[in-house]
Structure formats: C-alpha cells, structure tokens
Length: 293
Image (tube, rainbow, N blue to C red; front, top):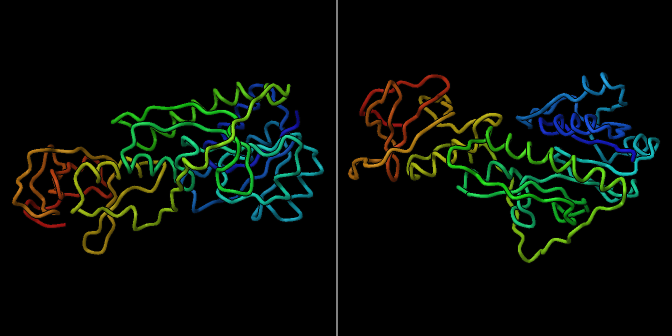
C-alpha cells in the first residue's frame, strides 16, 4: 500500500517513524520548512533523507504543483497527521482509499482547533485518540479508529500529548495492515452530538486573577510545554507560569491578584476563589508580599 504522508509537528514525526518501523511503504512526504505558529513543529526531513523518502516543502497543500507531485507517486492512501490547513476536494480524491486524518478528541465531540489545550483548560476528565477519513468539513468524516483516554489531574500538556501519541501509535500499528488488506471498518459520525472548539489567541492564555485558582491552574496545565505557557503581565513584561498548585483556605476578604506570601520561595497569589502557588515561572518571579498583580 503506497502512502503519501502530510505533517509538520512532533506527532507527525512519531507517526512517520512508526510507519517506517512497521515497514509501511511511504512514497512521499509533504511538510513545512518552518512553522512559527506551531509550538510543537518538527522537522521531518532528516528522517526522510535517512530512509531515502522523497519530500517537498509546501506552503499551499492544495496548490496544483503539490497535487501533481502527489499524483506522480500514485498513492493508495494519504495520511494527514499534524496539519492545520484544510484539504480541498481535489486532494481528498487523489488516492483510492482517501485521506486519513488525526484528531486528539472524542469525535464527534470537540471538533476544531487546539483539542488538547481546550480539554485541559476546561478541566475535562476524558478525551480520545481518533483517526478518521477526511472530507471537506472540519473533523466530520467517518471514524476509522478511536480509543478513549483518561485525563489525570496531574496531566499537563506535555503529559497528555505523550499519552495521546502513545495511544495513536498503537492504533496506527493496528489499522495500517487493515487498510492494506481492505479489512478495515468505518463508522459515520453522529453530527447531532458534535461541537466545535474555536481557535485560541494570545488573550486566551492571559491569567485573570478574578478566575478561580482551579480554573487558572487548568490554564497553566493546558499551555505547558510544548505549548506557549500561560502568562500575566507585570510592569509591561510577560511572566509565564509553567507549573502551579491550588491552595485552599485563603482569606475570603482579600482581593484577587494580591500576593499573600511565599512557600519555599514560590509566590502565593489570591484568586477569585482560593489561592494559587506559582511553582515554576519564567523569568523567575519574586514579588513582595502584599503587592498586587
């Protein structure tokens, strides 16, 4: 089974490595030379060179030159894992088996942008790893493989990213032979159960101390590495918070944003409800007790 691979993030690299490990026939790779908007961008080209796989850098995945390059390699299927741009109908119809996409959420729920970040920021306790046949909609195609995953309270973005990736690699190992033999199944999504998460911006990562400590802690977890970090501003400078802890029993008559003190050198900040211990900040933040953020 001849495979064209499209991707440009950490998971793309892991997936491509897994395909090569199971001796899948990857006949070409479409990727990005750089991606400032992808915090988890990964360069796939060293792996391609090592295994002598043809590759191209593409700005527009739907461009005629890209389509021609893909058609020349006569793929049976296209895998699109870690690509934030929509594929148009012409590309979707190039390979007989179509295009398989990946979405780390429990489709049809939670379609759209930034699924790992939203899941953590909203305090969800469960998500999924889903492979599906792409169509012109956003995450709306028939499901090829889906496995549920638990989000543990200690999980941050790095831990959840790794957990989902490990699960997805097991799924790839299972469904690639099924695609090759024609023994796969596909399940239509129930669109009545769908919702769509919007694109996040810089403002979504700014800490508002009027929020509960629990909500701010979830935001810190959600934007931990490999993402950009939750932040607040002091004297015009961004302070990133990479790790935090919720503390209860804070004074109810103290305004949000006041520094209550420190614990082992880390500041404790009053929130709309409870307080937050800022365990890891960048740059290291050592405010005066009684000051306001």
